[in-house]
Image (tube, rainbow, N blue to C red):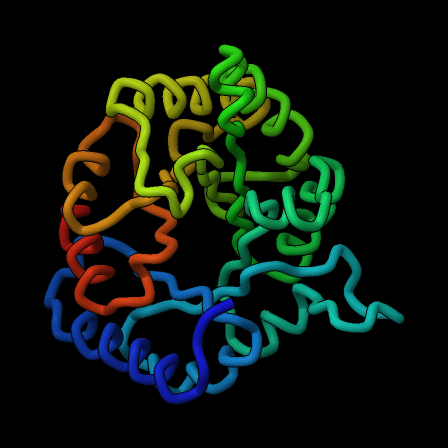
Length: 238
């Protein structure tokens, strides 16, 4: 919940110009601004190769759901992706795995790629339950019909978000390998599903994190509000 028209437009324009100037971009770049800015940013990033996504969606395509946004509405604006099950939605809004799965299905229905977030709290990690929590959330949040084409998994250890703390590379590698194995239970193309890491990713630690096996990209939080920081992370994905 950051950004007004002026700074949101400037940030997207800056990144779009930089990305368009890359003859061979090292990564895919997706911006997921607040819903108030999406339509404004469509022409700003047009032709740059930068994609746009939503931060959340409702499971239904329409109806009496004041304040909610349907996946079809996001697609209509020009979005290609939507984040579902972010830890802040799970924590602040009490979203459970079943609801996250319904939102992911809505994204697929609308032709969007669902970025499904999973991850343990500090208490769960301290109790040694990190892998079990991820297994449960994958089983409950990733709907039937998910493929590498329509689904991305984002691992975000809740205790590392916005705290400046990050797991060790060994911790990240262990969880991402576990996620890959869990996905292989039901997805034929699990080896191609992108698994992102999110949790205090910044320019100074991104190269190391992005070099960890099974880390296919980053779900960037606070660092995405600064074009230079965000760009450093993107370039470190090479």
